Length: 241
Image 1 (cartoon, rainbow, N blue to C red):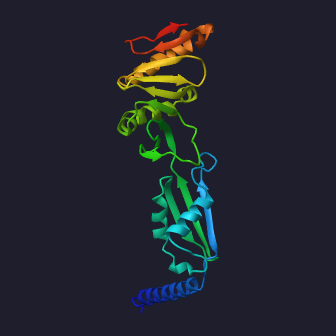
Image 2: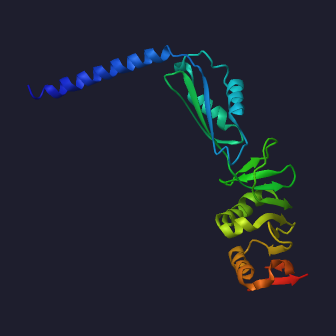
Image 3: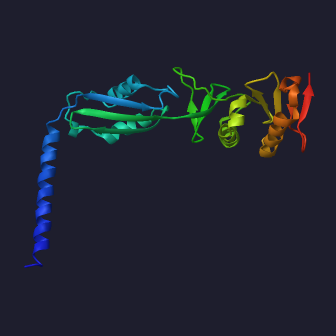
């Protein structure tokens, strides 16, 4: 008899599960969609897209959903529809028994903005992201001779390292690139420019610059210089006004 009990218990649990699933499915068919509840993450940091934009994308791309049974909604299709928008990094869509469709959006986050040609951003994953007519992100600006390839392969890791360092993140506002792929840094404070040259050995160059700015200028301050040149080996050269 003891050998039979596990089979009886298993059969009972299986039957209970089937009844519960059948009941839940029947109940879901009776639940009509009441509307969308949209949440856009990091909206205070970037405002490329808002709740109204998301609702419009769904209604234009998927169709009218109000009054439909929530069990008939294809949440995967809605998610795929949303992530096709160039400003959206990821989307999660699910429904609740009160009939609301919940949409959680994560926006793409730019690392820097390129103002060359039509212009573009490079996002935190190193991918090209179009500019938005609706919102401009407060990130470092790159001007001059910049191709998407150079921006993704060379500028992206360099600027990412700048933004990871509080000192450089607070200092560098703009980067100018010439046709030889040499860089000039424009600080947020002070009336001078920093000649970096190419990105070869840029870690050494930036440490030379850090030492020069923190110790080399002393009480005289940075503004006695019109230019700081890092192209020379083993030293930073300050050109006075």
